[in-house]
Image (cartoon, rainbow, N blue to C red; front, side, top):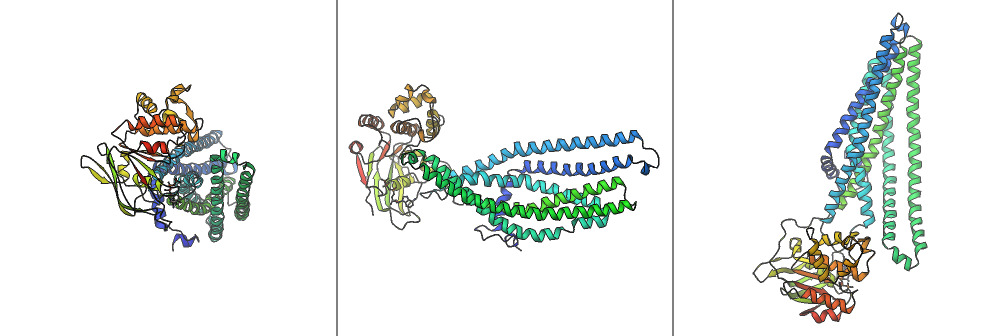
Length: 563
Ligand SMILES: Nc1ncnc2c1ncn2[C@@H]1O[C@H](COP(=O)(O)OP(=O)(O)OP(=O)(O)O)[C@@H](O)[C@H]1O
């Protein structure tokens, strides 16, 4: 029977086999931690069962009736020393387990987050994001944590738990077979009940997870647009919206908690009942003289050591189900194909671009944004792309940068040395791009410039800043080490734009694409900047612009007309 049917999981787009394969791959990356946890867990079982034997032995050697003569203090002391050594061993194992969980745990989680983030960054892009960024963050944080904890702690711990269960059962069986069977007789009932439990818990947990994602998405978007919200005087509506979203989450958490408390009470009653039965049985045997006092103590400890693992094993099922949910949520992030990989194709400068009958429409929109467009951007030329808003200028830029590929026609990069090739992600190295708006990241100005070229020297940064009319950086108290907050916070729009242009210049690419990149500059600075950029006749420059000042500098224009 399929696992999904067994646990009544809702239909998913991934089959059980692919989820298990995905989890297996994830496990392979964290083998060391999982194995260490398993070894520590198994040693813990050995120590724990040895403790039972040691206590039994210590009590028995201290009981005169059993010894038939006065007890030897020497033997009692040795028995207690053995108990103490086993306690120390238990403590050392607990320390080792905490160390492995915390130190190696955070490493394993970081590794998986890095891998996922890298995958997301290299995924093909189709014009807009599939998931809300808050939702993606929620998955990268909680679902990754869930998967890593399950693979590196829960599964190895379960091995130890199983070993403890079997070891304690055998020990008890050797002492009293009937009692051992009575102790585990309740397990089939648990398995039957846990099926109903899992179904309900799975539904409640997935509702809580998706509400949690919504709360995080709302908070993230609110903080991101704090300025806008202030200017719209929408602080109260936004807080109220958060309260509404959170109240749904609270309601779902309450429902899940009520269900979980109820299940725990039922579980607790079952285990207590089992314990009382075991106690009664052992007490009766002791009263008849067929069980020593040490034996009675061992009995009770062993019942605990059977019931504890049994309880933990029952928890494994809902945990496994929740890991399946987490794995599916992470697999969704890896669903889209990767960009083409390989050696970047860098052509000798200057390069041009030829569009041959290019047509493009976004996947979910029927309207053709670009229709049968043919155009030549010759090497070392300067072109202005014009067009009314929404006509498709940015779409065309995305095609040049190979972020989108046309459904029809060809987009080719070429040079005067007869090199030419179709535009692909591998030809992106020939481009430097300055997008619309403020695109600086948090960190220093130097950090932002290094995104243009990691190896850029201070002198090269100075030169690029000078070319982009951003000499003001050297008048700031911390110069290149001036800290910007998110989206270049702390700088004016025009200052951020000029640093973004310097960052693009540092790429030293043969084609420079600027999307409304001078919109926040005063006419004099804009003129100076255009002169500086166009002085390099090895660079092909493409402006998307509505500004006459820019158009006047260009050799040709391309007007995109709305279809
Ligand atoms: N990811 C997308 N999915 C579907 N349609 C899109 C997507 N991105 C843009 N569009 C649509 O494509 C059309 C062209 O958009 P584009 O951003 O290229 O226009 P634009 O000329 O750059 O506009 P503006 O001057 O306002 O920036 C618009 O009608 C827009 O609604």
